[in-house]
Length: 476
Image 1 (tube, helix red, strand yellow):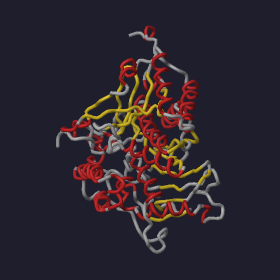
Image 2 (tube, rainbow, N blue to C red; image 1 turned 120 degrees about the horizontal axis):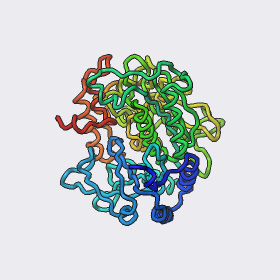
Image 3 (spheres, rainbow, N blue to C red; image 1 turned 90 degrees about the vertical axis):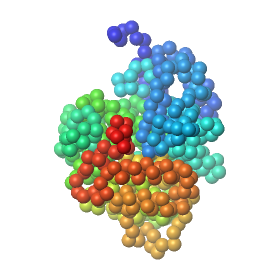
Image 4 (tube, rainbow, N blue to C red; image 1 turned 180 degrees about the vertical axis):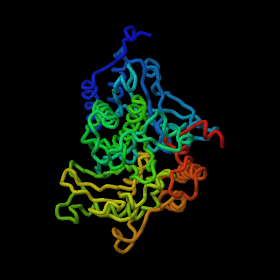
C-alpha cells in the first residue's frame, strides 16, 4: 500500500527530542498524574495522525511485553484495559488470571517512525490486580511505590544511571539460532574504543544513539567496549523509575536497530568464552532538597556517612541479592576475576573486582557504583532491591566489612540457596513473589548444565529469559 494515502504521524528527530524532554521534565517536577492524564488524552484525541498507542509492561523476570491499542479505543477505554495474566510467566495462576493495565501518563514517549512505526506513541503500563491495587508481581509498580514513599516520608529522590554493555553479532536472531550454530559471529574485532567510521558496529552505535537522543535520554558518550563487537552507549541519570524504564527502552532500541541492520544485539552476560562479559554497572545517589546526600568533602573517599551506610547495607546482603542482580545461569560465567569481573563482596575506590566501587566525584556527581549487576536482570528488581536494601536494610557486625575476604556465589544454584533462605529477601518481596521468582530461576537452571565448564552451552542461551522461546519451553 502506498504511504501517500496514510496520514500518520512522522516527526523529525529534533521534534521528537523536544517533546520527550518536555515530558521528562514534567516527570521530574512530579506534575500530578490527573493533570498529565487530562493533557495526554486531549492530545491523543486531537492528534488525528496517531493510529495506535503502544503500551509496555514487564513480567517478573524483566521481559518486556508490548500491546498496541487502537488510539480511539484507548482514549475511550484507558481505565479498563484487561489482559490474561496467566499467560505471563511469573504472574497469576489460570484460576485468577484477570489483570488490568493502568497507564503511567508520566512515562509517555514520542517514538521515531523509522524504528517503531509511523503513527504511534508509547506509554508504560502498571499492572493492577483484580482488587484494584498494584499487582505484587509487577516490580515496576513496587519500585514506583517505594520511591514515592521515600519522597513522602523523607524527602528523598532516588537517582540511578546504568552503564549497559551488550554485544552486536551477525545475523538476525543469533541467540535463538545458537542451538544450531553453536557460535556467535563478531561484526567487529577492534576492541576498546576502536571502531572505524562507517563499519557495522559504529553505524549501529550511531543509529542507536540517535534514537535514544530523540527519545529524551540525554546522551553522554558511546563507544566500543573491551571485547570484540561489544558496545556501551551512556546517558544521564534520572529518577529511579525513569532510569529503569530507560533500561528497558535501551535494550528494545538496540535490538530493533540491530534487526533492521541484519544483526542481533545480545545482552547475555557472557555469550563468548575467553573474552570480557557484559555488565550493567548501576550508579546510585540520593538527593534531598537538591542536595546530594552521598557527598561529603571531608568523608572517606569524599563519601558521607549516609553513603557509606548505604554501601555497608548492600555488602551485608550481597550474597542474598545475587540472584536478583545476576538472574541467569550465564550470568555466573561473567563473575570471573580473570576478566575484570566484580565477584568480591567489598567496596573500593580503585579495585574493579569489588562488588561496589566509589567513583571519583564532586558535589553533583558523587555516587556509589554497584558493578556486579548483569544486563539481563529485571531492572525494576535490581533498582528496588538495591535502594530498599541500601536505605532500610541491616548492617552486619562483620569486622572490616568493606574489605573482608568474601565472594559472590559462582553459580546460580548457590545464589538461589542464599536467596531462598534469606529473611531479608522475604521481607523485601513478600513470600509469594519471592517463591515465584525462585521457581522461575530454578526451572531455567535445571534445564542448563549444573557444572558450567569453560564453554558456553546452547541450553544456557536457549533458556535465557531475555530471548524467551515459547515453542522451546512448550517441550517441557
